[in-house]
Length: 239
Image (cartoon, rainbow, N blue to C red; front, side, top):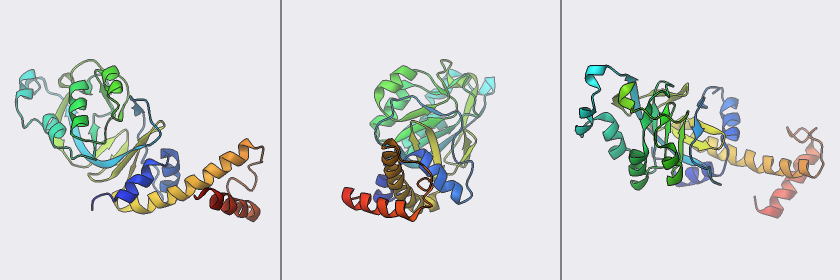
């Protein structure tokens, strides 16, 4: 089922930290990608989109010559041309950043096609160029060598691991300054709704703490008086 516009909008306004807590309440502990960081300067809203996946395996020298890129059916080339607009291209590079998963030209093409973002647990070449594009992009670290030296693009839109997180095609991928988290597709609507509520309360708490209030009974909300104050705060701000 396609991601609802309302759900997408809600997820753009919540943090991966809040989403991690909402998922943890449901027993999901490993949905946050490890060692995956933003290349771009994160904006006010999070990257959000359904996962379209590309899996790399270790390269074998006789199969990974430059000539393979002449084949329009090469999985990496197909991924760039077939990842649907509004989706996030997620690459399983085996957490190996010694060679690039992609570079500036391919990421620019994804951006031109309306892709919502690109993620790898390896590295990008042309990382400064990618950062300047403005498309949400996440990797482990810069990597100059071509992916062909270490990575063999093998499969599209299958379940993968990226930064130790399980990613199934169609799962909802959210990225911000803290990293990238994966929401199982069937939970996206309820997680988005709960995270929106949590964010409203967290904003209230942050304001109270800055004003000098103790966190006791406030965070978490164990004092009914604080809940009453929150209700009044919310009504005043239309939250």
